[in-house]
Length: 111
Image (cartoon, rainbow, N blue to C red; front, side, top):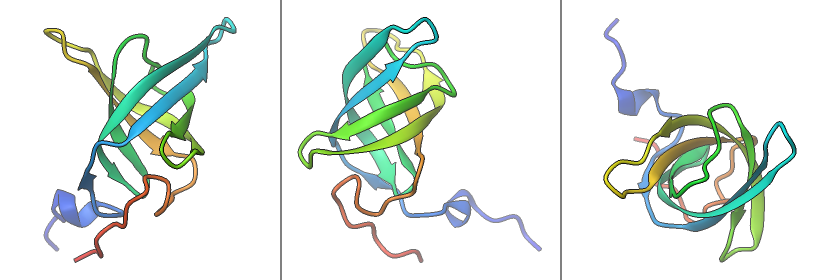
């Protein structure tokens, strides 16, 4: 059997959309952070966010607040790229509970 393509392995369709969110977390020493971010790509299981420093480390549990909808969801940071040349860091998060509704969009049906 042939290996599935990346798109075939996805659990839900990806959508490129800029959704404003707040990302809040507490560090191991008790410091609280809350940073404005915006999504770059989302799906029902998480998303890729653009945000400035400070940003959470990999495995950090964060609270995402979808600003326009006044809705929140817990998520875990699964990937971080350091910012370069004045750009924002890119943070991949996985929602604690998959949601077709959190991002405020309708995802296209799977092929």
